[in-house]
Image (cartoon, rainbow, N blue to C red):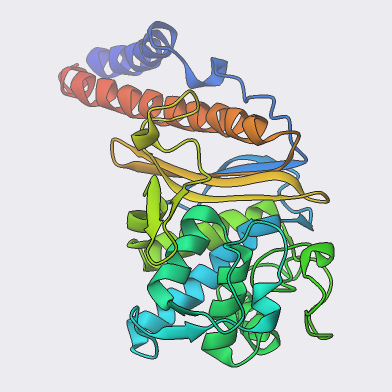
Length: 315
């Protein structure tokens, strides 16, 4: 009886010692993220470790291409599309503004070339050309984008207006009348979309992690717009970072959906409406640091408890 009483006195005391001796997660404050919205998600659990205006619908710029990437990968997986298929560039695709490859009307490009250009370089004309090739018109493809959004559980606040994420002012003189308006997404939905994309098509990371690609026939080398890639070894590189999508329009500001993996934990960070190209990566670093600091601390404590438990059971 006395030993049982002693056990229930010592257990809380030992737990308190563990928490005081360790670097407690409760003392790691959430970072002050300078952006209009931001979320941090644990891919395995789907839990949001941080949420700043995550339900607010905002212009998402090229992060909308995550949905275009998903639909292309689904069609390739189902056999409806082959990477070697040739795509004829329409007049509309050749005149889309924003980041583009300066594709010529009537030019032939492979699905693989267009896909890599879209993922790595964020080319708007590549996204439009793929949408038209897959669905006959971009308008039909956009309908499919929104249907897929509902199917995977994105909120009604997220709405796709085109395949590229280009702002309406960037669509060019030849855009169809039924392609208008700006895509809007919430940071929470963007993280959920990125999570679904990586979980169902992990091969996307093989493309998104490439630092550069060669556009054969044009003599062009396109550099990845994601400066956080660990393979770049630059001032904004982050260990374990291998994706996923940048974005910018005048209305959206600088946006980024990033992902990184360390010690078996993969995080997804979304930053929307940052003030500069560099700032979006700096703010993402804050999120990653917070998320990866959080996880090991918790694991270390559980490990400490495992080691102590046998001794406690002897009391």
